[in-house]
Amino acid sequence: MTTSAPHGPELSRRTLLGLTGGLGAAFALAACGSNTGRPTTGPAPTGRSSGVGVTLEQWYHQYGEAGTQQAVEQYASAYPGAAVNVTWKPGDYDQTVGATLLTDGAPDVFEYANGPTIDMIRSGQVVDLTDVFGPALADFNPALIKRLTYDGKVWAVPQVVDTQLLVYRKSMLNKAGVAPPTTIDELVDAAGRLTSGKVKGLFLGNDGGAGLMGGPMLRSAGFDYLTDAGTFGFDDPRAATALGTLRTLFTSGHLLLGAPVDWFAADALIHGLTAMQFTGLWTFPEIAKALGDDFGVLPWPAMTGGAPNVPVGAYGSCVSAHGKNVDAAREFVKWLWVDSTDKQLDFATGYGLHIPARQSLAAQATALRQGPAAEAVTIAQRHGFPQNHLLWTPRSTTAFNDMMSRIVKDGADPGREITALKKIVDGQLADLGRTSPATG
Image (cartoon, rainbow, N blue to C red):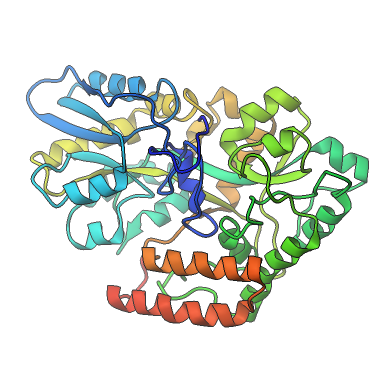
């Protein structure tokens, strides 16, 4: 997927991953999710399938990759069970969907970043798709299925997986005698040893990771935003230590800050401004073209008591409960995103580099069979965490972002900041009526 100017009007698959750390940091690229960075690629034409009888309306946000629009229109045209009108939606897709679902004009099928919101589910705007999967459910990325599950029901079918990883220049590490870091302590040490002259050891974004790395740091220490029971997930001194590590890096002089292009592109790594960078799988073709095999990939390292991890996210195909043809819409979603593995493989790797949502398909993708891309697939399957939690509300997101900025940039006490954040998040959870029940 191509990158775009900051805060562009449209969104493509990889924008989703702009939410991993602060869950809302300004993220300037054409990618997956609910951050911005949405490249405008022209008008929004409508494609119609050749089916007869029932007519379904299907919505997509405006992707940035060339050929993606034509591909989904071809998929629709190939469906034998109904006529399918594919609408490419420019502008603020999330807001348009949210407003339209409340009206008689709701589409039958629509995609949404990480699946429908908790409000969509609780208000009955979308239907349960659990039985659409059938025995194939076990083949889908488990972290994504967990994210799409509420009260034991799966509310969307993931279309494709995007992830972020720690990428490093092999030659730079070899020259400095530094082994690829497998723990946070090793990472901090490596960042220092790899910093020399104009080259910095690590790049986590121009804000020092405040908007990107909160989630990975919590998971490295064994925590997450919320517990599986839907309660505040990191009221613990070890979580405070983990978040404080980002402040240590920020003040160390070993982080690249103020790069010409932010973390979502590989420019800093390619041009030798940094030896290690946290960035997305979508950058790998560009890196390979520039550096050949002079790069490796790792999960974000673990701290004591935690685990290595990478964030994973996906657009989920949803069915409106107020559509005129709910059963037909469910059948179409099953045909396209569960049964038609050829189309799923094409969508994942034909217009950019992404991981098929069905794990068995990754081995069939030529672009994912070897080298760092193959390693990235294995890492995402073994160490992938949903980039956010279904019950983590926009208000919690904003408060978390503000907290991370104060900790990393201003040196605020992490323990006190976490205590203050917990009050806000607990209030949000109470408003949802979810104080203890499990969401999975």
